[in-house]
Every structure is written in structure tokens, then in C-alpha cells.
Amino acid sequence: MNSRFSLFFMACIVFCIAGSIMFSPVAGLIPDELVVDYGQDSLQQHNTSTPIGVLVMQSGFVSDIGTEYSRAFSLAAKDVPGSHISQVIRDAGSNISVASMAWKNMSESYPDLPVIVTVASWTSNTVYPDASALGMVQVALGSALINRNNSPDHLIRFTPGVEQESPVLATYLEQFNRIVLLGGNNQYTNGYADTFEKLLPEKTRTISWYNPDDPKSTLNISEIREADPDAIVLLGFSEVPAVVRVIRDAGITAPLIGTRGVENNALAATKEAEGLIFTTPSLNRTNPFFDRYREYYHEDATFFGAEGYDAMTSLYSAVSTCGNSPDCICTWYQNQTIDGALGEVSFDNNGVASYPITFRAVRNGTFEDVTLPPSVLPDTVE
Image (cartoon, rainbow, N blue to C red):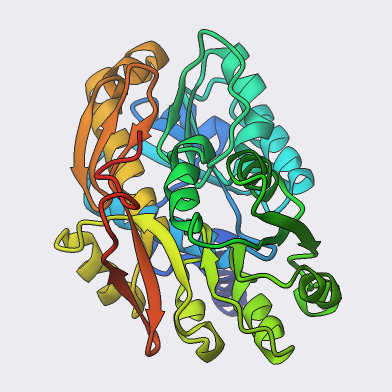
């Protein structure tokens, strides 16, 4: 009986451990993951490990973008074996409410984090006041709009802001006379909408909002028709393929132009999106990251993955040099130039990145680079 009981007990232990791994949010999201989320007690035992907080969207309408970022973070971890950094990942969702809860959980569980990585404008803006007050390094990704109003702070911006990229797109839009802006009601799209109203006041006919979780039911087709646009600017993300289908099914044929947020593999596969043009970083596609991403995940990485990879690999370098000193890490980025998957990324004295911006278009089920005149496409975003 004792022998049978022992076998049964051991089997239960194995089953429970396997079950915890199988149903772990991180393990389910990222196969063969190297990310480690130590508990607070374990961190005291592994005192050589520097935890880096990561708030990324694992749920909601942009969870696919969050998946790409998380995969890129994973590849970065694989490329630095033996690193003393541990990534502590929390789901920040696709809205301010979930992001706020995730940050509360993160800050309570790890009150002494030297670095927090935030993905998406709503998450970055949620975290910024606290991170700034605590002297914590905040690395902001996928965040074209950040209300940066504290000085000094330790903010590192990998994503050029609306104020940097919108003039490039506005120059391209000068050729049109009646422009309609479409987007979900969030900080990213509001920031772009406000900027375009200032840059192109006589050309912007209307701004039409929809629910990104349900664009089919909430997109106001009548409002778009009444504006009679000769160009439609899409200020969205993962929901854009659905938006495009609704527009084209309604018989609206105006050219479609997007910001960088629209780039995803589902858009390339959307036949109604043929000819859609959008801004994007001029990526260095010879970087090994892109081949490795396809090898691991069987699809092409977009700029989201490239940005995530460059951000995390540069963080490994910064922490390797600085340890857990926020001042040193922040200084490490200032006036630094990184040659990575995004291409040549240059940070200014305030830790704000800039890099070449180009246009791509949907052609025959894939994305193709678009060559535009120098007057429309400057070498770098200033």
C-alpha cells in the first residue's frame, strides 16, 4: 500500500507541475520561453538577477501585437544566455483600465524595479507619472503619444512621437483635398487626429470614431459617405483589416492611408486592403532577427517585433554596464546610436529615438516598399 501511495503521490506532483506550466499565461503565449518571473522571495535568493518589468498587451483587440513584442523579447533573451536580467511580464491589456491594474500589481509586487518597459501609449501614460516620481527608467515602446511633463525623468522613447512622424505623413496627404480620419477613441488616435487637424485644417473633413473591439457595428459609414473623401486615413491597429472590409463592402473606393500601427500580417492577407499605403520605419531586414523570428514563429516580423528586439537587447547591454542604477542606464541611452533590426536608431540627449521612416504598401498579399520623392520622404524623422 505504501508503494502504491508513493507512486500516486509522485504522479500528482508531476501532473500539477505540468498543468501549471501548460496554463501559465506566459508559457501559453510564448513557446520555448526563456522569460523568468521570480517571486519576491526568490529574488532575494537570486540576488544577482536584475528584474525588468514588462507591461505588454496579452489581451484585447491588440493582443496579436503584444504577442509579437513578447516573442521578440523572448528571442532577445535567447541571444544573451547567462544574463543577470529577468523579464517580469504582466498583461496590460488594450485599454487604460487593464493597464492601470497591471501597473498596480507590478509596482506592489516589485517596488524596487530599476526599469519598466511599457508597450502602447495608454500604458506608457498610465505608468509615466509614477515611474518619473520614483526615478525609475521607463522604456516606452509602441507609444507615439506620451504626456512627458516631468523634468527630470528617466524616460527612454523608442517610438518617435506623433509630433515627429505626422509631418511626413501630412506632406504625403497634401495631394488630397478631402480627408477623413478613422480610429478608435484612445490616446494614440486622438493624438494623431489633433495633429492632423492642425497640420491640414482645410483638408480634414471629419474624424469618425468607432469601437475597435467591434468596428463592423460601430463604423459610421453614412458619416464617411457624407464627407465624400478623396483619402481615408486609418489611425488604428489590429482592427484595421475589419475596418477596411467594411469600407470596401460599402462601395467606398477612396485611397486608404495608414500610420505605422496598421502593419500586421492579417492586413497583408486582406484582399480589400490592396493598395493601402502606410508609414513604417525603414527596417534593416538583413538583421538576423527577421530570419530567426520566421524560423521560430513561422511568420514575418513587423516593426513591432523589430522595436521590441532592439529595445530588449539594448537593455541587456545597458544593465550589463550599469547594473541596477537607473541614472547610469538612462545616461547609457543618451546620445547613443544602435544598429539593430530597426536600422540605425539614434537617441538624443533626452533619450528620444529617431530613425529613417519610409512608406510601404499592400501588394498581392504582401507588403512592398514604396519609393516616394525626397520632398515627401526625408531621410530621417526630425
